[in-house]
Length: 161
Ligand SMILES: CC(C)(COP(=O)(O)OP(=O)(O)OC[C@H]1O[C@@H](n2cnc3c(N)ncnc32)[C@H](O)[C@@H]1OP(=O)(O)O)[C@@H](O)C(=O)NCCC(=O)NCCS
Image (cartoon, rainbow, N blue to C red; front, top):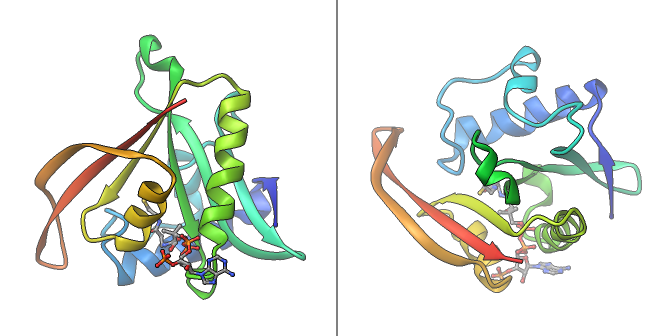
């Protein structure tokens, strides 16, 4: 499994992956489908510091992941927020674990001190992945969002490096 830095050629794959979860899951809080013209506003692109990677296995796209600015105030520059989205054909096979390990390696090499992940409270696969990797659930916003006529609770996971 390897990471390749995202290019515009990957936008169709990213849109397809996001739209699958937008339609079928509460793991993502978009409710309207997105298009390629939205991508640059959602993931880091052509940024000197924050990066998006396509996760590949023998030339096949498995998913994508990124680390982005946590908050737009300079004092937060020691922290990043991450996300991993595997294409639905490739979940439950251990790729999430491999992706997180590689992403953490890049983040720590870049001297960041905190990794934050926001996870919907019913997203068991994601919670298991972060808890298994020593992320602590440090915050919870109860019923902060609504999708498919359901109130959603958002969890904040943190790992200090
Ligand atoms: C959340 C997500 C990134 C986790 O990745 P994943 O590959 O599914 O998860 P993991 O790497 O943790 O592996 C999951 C399971 O596969 C099992 N597995 C099957 N084959 C395996 C293999 N060859 N090697 C390792 N694990 C394997 C593991 O036992 C594990 O099960 P467990 O958690 O019950 O122990 C992925 O499911 C995903 O993209 N989900 C949709 C989008 C999403 O929710 N993103 C996160 C938003 S915060």
